[in-house]
Length: 173
Image (cartoon, rainbow, N blue to C red; front, side, top):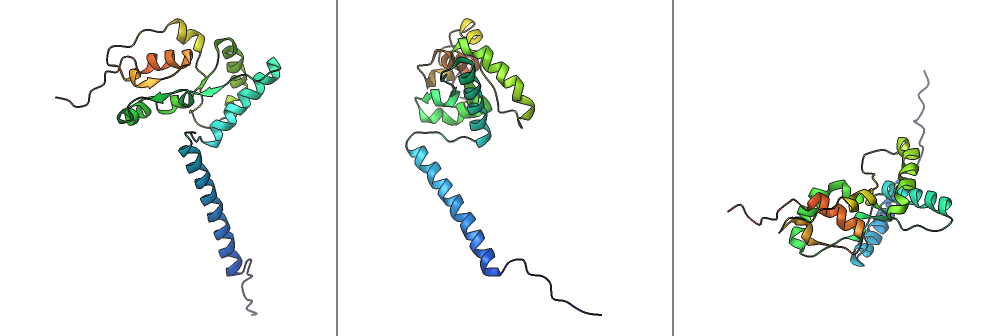
């Protein structure tokens, strides 16, 4: 019987260098994310960014020009930061829904329907801004939606629809 030494695939030093390089790449990514956040830019999961880019590309091909496509979160500012957690918790993944001008929504939804079988998760959505704007109701007094500021009519209507019936309450007394 002959005993052979196990085959070494990598020297320990090379392995440590690879781990070090991977960690440094992660540190660089996190530093870039911190820089974006400090500049007021939000950071999104790559799947969401790819989804948005795919919709933008499809609309560009359809119309021969760039069409503005935004994440809802990019169109909103919070007046009072003490309400941030409540707003983000309630909106949950809806804050990642795409907002477009009403005239582009139907085509964006068709593009989405063509790729949705390839998408993993349920964080993806396109707000039908035409319907939301047509059916918008004023929020109740002291509603959570009052804490959000936006210049976008579709975003405002959607936020009023989702948060317009939730009354703010600092305590239960």
